[in-house]
Length: 162
Image (tube, rainbow, N blue to C red; front, top):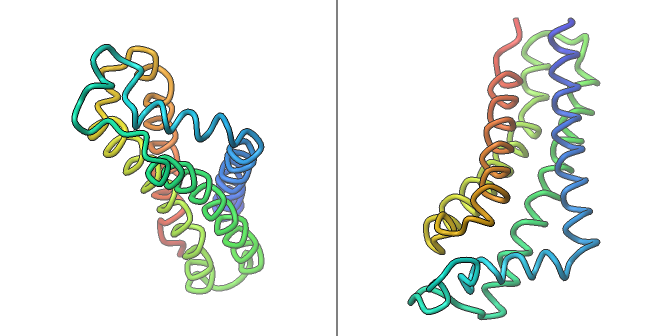
């Protein structure tokens, strides 16, 4: 029972991270778009803006910003719903509790996809953000840290309850 409660609280923290992050992105929409544009224009490191993949295309910039905020919002809502389902199945047989985790685990997966796919694959690899000293220690380190923690929590929560 204690492990189930810990899993529920961990999922609640994931929901809070997603909802707080989405809220911050939406409340500071100009900064969100500006940050994505700084990545796609590759202006944060010398010579980046002249690279062939550098772009200020508003469709790409806004798609990136919407992807980030939307993923956090969807993840937060899915984890909140998952936590509620897990709480409702707290005293149920193991199969019911395990089934209640599914939506929360899918939400965590969305966050890892956004963090790894968006920040590591697209920003760091495609837009060469690894060259930017200002972002290497900031956004990329945070994305790696968040993705790792979320994945670790998902692995623990996903472990079968007997």
